[in-house]
Amino acid sequence: MTLLPPHGMADSLVAEVRAALQPQRLRQTAVALVEVPSPTRQARAVADRLAELLQEDGFQVERPEAGWRESPAVACRYAAGLPGRTLQFNGHLDTVHLPFVPPRVDDGVLFGSGASDMKGGIAAAVEALRILRDTGLLRHGTVLLTAHDLHESPWGDGSQLDRLIDAGYVGDGVLLPEYLADRLPLAGRGMAVLRVRVSRPGEPVHEVLGGAEQPSVIAAGAELVRRLVALDGRLRAEAHPLAGRASVFIGRVASGEIYNQAPVEFVLEGTRRWLPGTAPAAVRDEFQRLLAEVAAASGTQIEGEFALGRDAFEIAPEDPLVQAFQAAYAAVCGAPLPVGAKPFVDDGNSFVSRGRVPAITHGPQALGAHTVNERVPLAELERIAVVYALTALAFCRAEQPA
Image 1 (cartoon, rainbow, N blue to C red):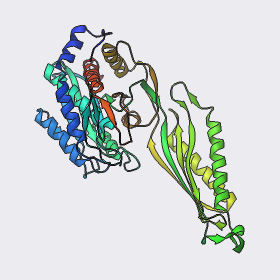
Image 2 (image 1 turned 90 degrees about the horizontal axis):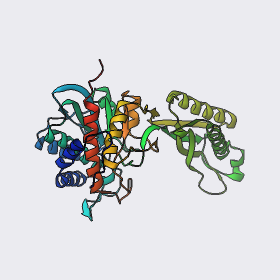
Image 3 (image 1 turned 90 degrees about the vertical axis):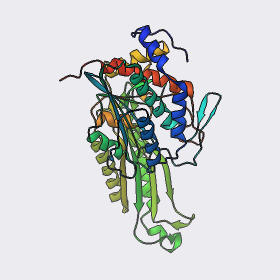
Image 4 (image 1 turned 60 degrees about the vertical axis):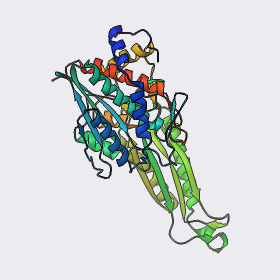
């Protein structure tokens, strides 16, 4: 990996951090994590592996349950001698429920389950921690590394991270090595999964044997779709300069068994996304009112689930974490990273909304997330390790405000 001329950081500092990077050690760590299957809700074995790797390196490790004793989280602190801020590296160890693919390295690219989402990124964060320890450059503040289960939906609900935050496992700023590399996401929408069931009493019945006289769950569902599409149209006026617009998306509807039978159920699934500054409770209440109105008009029963994923967030461009990260990124890549929106929701949303700390999602330029063909260039893991270490040096050196 070639480092371009630094911007805002001394050449000697960047060179020293780069020289401390051990590519083979980083590769071995990434492979060691990927080779342990860890579908969501079953991440204990890989959490144990990460804890062992850190302990073998001489780091003190904690294993907070954080509400999920089946897979205790991993927490590791590396503290300097002088006061300063705490920078947190955070990642999830669980993977989506797809057939397990063992790790392999081919032409400088790591393949395997979780390689891109996000065990490779966690390995890079571990290497950054080692660089700081090996060089002794971190003289102020603390670096906190955390890793956990229960991230991937629909199997996980993010609750283990929430409990970690509530228990104080949170820094003054957070870096998350998810697979977003082309922008610095300073804003992002909140998201909830919508699940609706429209029903009527009785059993399915033939159209000519009374079915046509029953309340139509399909007609009620069609009206519900119409109302949600109209709401999405109105939401187009709600725009954020970075995050884009609020939205309603319908991804699935289903009802009926055959063409001339009156069904008893209609189901709908989709998402609702909102902008920073909008309260999730207000969005939920709006959704529930809409369902109640359609139910009353159609004579059907409508049950709706508003499954909150993550809240919206926004980070100020002048935040010290943003400034530290941009200085580190420019030192490695030659120019600051363009700012933009986060296209998905992730743990960073929770750190901002629940932990009240800035959180930047920036990881390797990886491909294949949520597929059986996950892959990440090892050079990208090396880049992340260096950027993270340099960000820690810039961010932690400032004394935490009283």
